[in-house]
Length: 89
Image 1 (cartoon, helix red, strand yellow):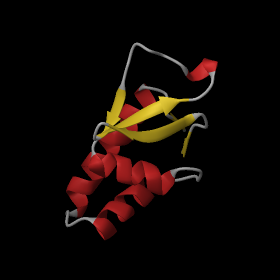
Image 2 (image 1 turned 45 degrees about the horizontal axis):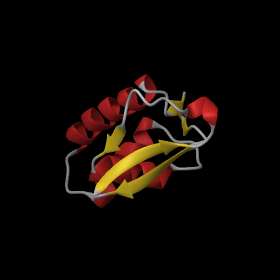
Image 3 (image 1 turned 60 degrees about the vertical axis):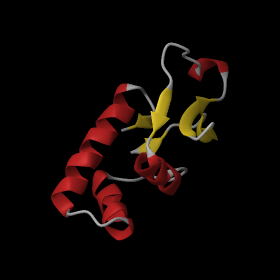
Image 4 (image 1 turned 90 degrees about the vertical axis):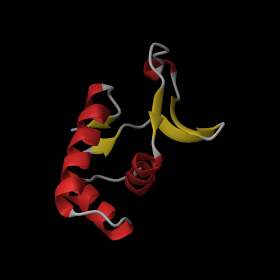
């Protein structure tokens, strides 16, 4: 997987917001916000290919979380990113 080009994260008024560059990426019907952990993963994986397993490993290295919880959270996060078109498979 890879985060699609044309998207970046910005902190606006304390919220991590995904913004799009370029007319083809603009969809004003949804505002995409990321919590602190999702923003951390986004920043770690920007501009590189990654797998769900790599995301889980990054979480395990950075946070005190067990592997089952990390896997569940990563699966949900990746699914939500796919649904809104932020990542390429």
